[in-house]
Every structure is written in C-alpha cells, then in structure tokens.
Length: 334
Image 1 (spheres, rainbow, N blue to C red):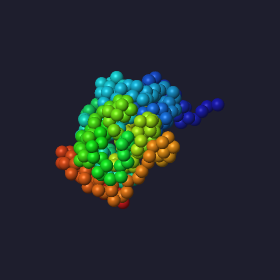
Image 2 (image 1 turned 45 degrees about the vertical axis):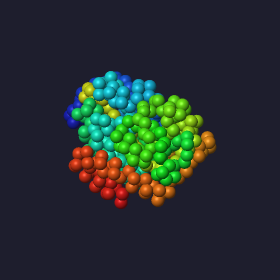
Image 3 (image 1 turned 30 degrees about the horizontal axis):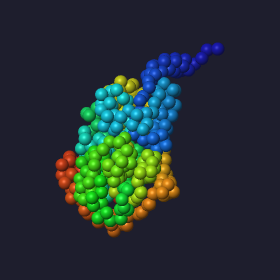
Image 4 (image 1 turned 90 degrees about the vertical axis):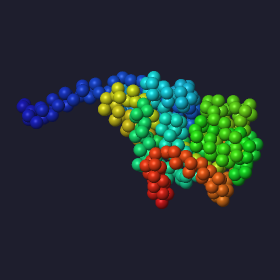
C-alpha cells in the first residue's frame, strides 16, 4: 500500500526534528541556592520550580537545591552567579540595590498596601524595567516571588507607636533604604548578614530584627525574641535569578523551559507564602511570643516620619524609573 506523499513528508519531518530537539536540551545540573530553611515558602517554590523543569526537559535539566545559606549569604551568592560558578538563586530584591540602586524603590516603607498591589507593581512595567537592568550586571531574572510584609520583633517592648523604636538596636539588611528608615525612627540599625542573625539575637548583640512572619517562625526567632509587632512597614519580594554566563550557554529550548517553569511556579509560591504568613502568626503566639497590631493612625505617623528618607532616596535614582514607580503605584492602588 502506497502512503500519500503528504504523510511521507510529514513523517520525515518529524523524524528529522526529533533528534534536533533532543540535542537542544543537554544534561545539566543547576545549582540553586537560597537563604531559607526547607520548610520556608522560598524552598517550596524552589522545589516546585525543580519539578517543572525536570518534567519539561524530560529529566535532562536537574535543579539541585542548596537551602539555608549553604552556598553563602545573598551577596556571596550574587557574586557566584556573576562569576558563573553558581547557576541560580532566589534572594530578596533588597540585595540587588548594591548593583542597581533603583531596586531600593521596592523597599520604600509604607508604599504598598496589599498583595494584589504588590503583584501588579512587580509583574507590570515597573518590575520588568528593573529586571531589564540586570543583564549588564551579569544576572538574568525570571520573575518575582513573594516574601511578604516585613514586621519587627525585639526582646524589649511591643512596637505600637513610632516612639517605641527609640534606641532599639535592630538588625537590618545592608541596604541604604533600611538603614536610613530606621535611623529616622531613632532606632539603631545594625547591618548584618542573615546567617549571623540568630546568634546576634541570642547573645543580645542586637535587640531585634525585621522580617516576614514566615521567616521569623522558620528561623525560630521566637526562641530569642519576646515581641512581634505587625508593623507591615515594607512589602518584600524574592527574585528568581540566573547567572548570565550560564544563561548564555543555554539553547533557546532550555531558556524557554526555565522561563515557563518560573512563571508557572510563581502563583504556587505566592499562594504558599501568603498562607504560611497567616498561619505563622498563630504559631508564634503559641510558642510564647507577644503579638500586637499597630493601629492605622500610628502607622500613618510612622510613615510621615520616614517620608523624608524616601524623598531623599528617590532624588538619587533614575528619574524615569521613579516616575514609572509612582505612576504604577497609583495605578495599582485602584
């Protein structure tokens, strides 16, 4: 029986295409480092990303997770990505302000009021404009994950009004926005790598720190801190980074797999992170922490005290990006 010519041509094309497609995806192990423990939503997002990458590549691309600062602190891992000795990481966006200072805009206190606004801001033109600045710094970003609203813990007193910050030694991320914000509140901000934080709290080298609820719980800060106050002063995000040196070695098919896996894992990670934050508050209280809300009126007072900081910082950033940030904040607030 003779097959129609169209079927013969189609079959030949499929056979010709199959080996080429297989060659487009090589056996690779991707070292993926982050600071968090394996029960943290960043780790859950990493695991989902790894599953998706494996499935999409037929098992050829393997993502190997290195949690809990195994590969160093955020800045050490950033340097490793830029040097091409580590393939991926998921740091807080805050850590990128040293190489692209406009990432500091994400850290402006009391700017973002909801998760919906945060997602719209980062997934939209503003977040993408920041991402576009990274390749020249040796990094490629595949999108933003949720870290959550940051809240203050300390061993001395509840934070209910701006005056309660006075004199508190608080560990902060080594970032100008955080340093200047807490100085404006008359606290004593101490920049310190995250991996050193628990020991510093335990030894009373610092009185407190600020992080999302899930980070506070996962790292057992309740063991060395008495008070947790829902200041919700900054919305924090993680960013999915790839070494540009590694990225440039990938075929278009491999790049597409990583991009799709990043997009698909984002919604899962955000949902897991926000559910964990809600649950963490109750668990922290059950483990002995004294929890308190901060009233809207006092939050507004704190916001007014730190406004000169953000005004000063914004003046030092790219005016076009500041304008885009402000317009996107206004648009997403609706």
